[in-house]
Length: 231
Image 1: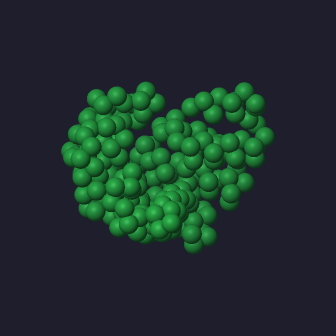
Image 2: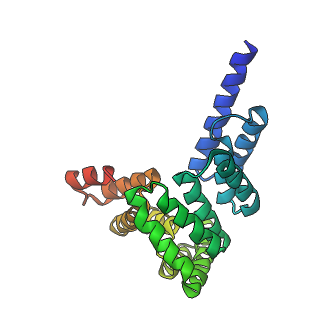
């Protein structure tokens, strides 16, 4: 009976952490994954998920330690190498980022990710472009703060500037699309932003947001919506 309730608690913590992460509640996700790790060090994926929650909060050093530990324990694997590249990119370490992206590209890289990683490698090799990428992240944070404060014009300006500085800033494409859809009543512009984010990084949350924008603008034909689901 004790083992049964222990399994239930582990499942609850895992689901709580994943749901909190999906909703952008990264501190809550971190707490759930830390508790789960303390209960069961061998729980599959818990270190990786905890590291993702830390990375989302820009807690780079502890996230790096967890990711590198997983890499040493489990070996080279595309998702582990890719996320380490992203960590170093956000941390402002171009050489380490470029090396991880190189290793990820050589490790059975999915076709839909190859162009994005090549773009990131090129940015890492160019000091000026990498400096601009750092400025892009700063503008992205400024845009999020403005949105939270209700300054919609300021948020839009900051997010658009973030994308002028670094078009590989996928979260900025997503947040710009969300802003245009929910606050500017511009579903066509929102759909364009979500499409560009999806072109760079085909992830489910961008796909879901694009479908919402297409429904709002009424311009998405059935065939177009079906095609977006295939990405």
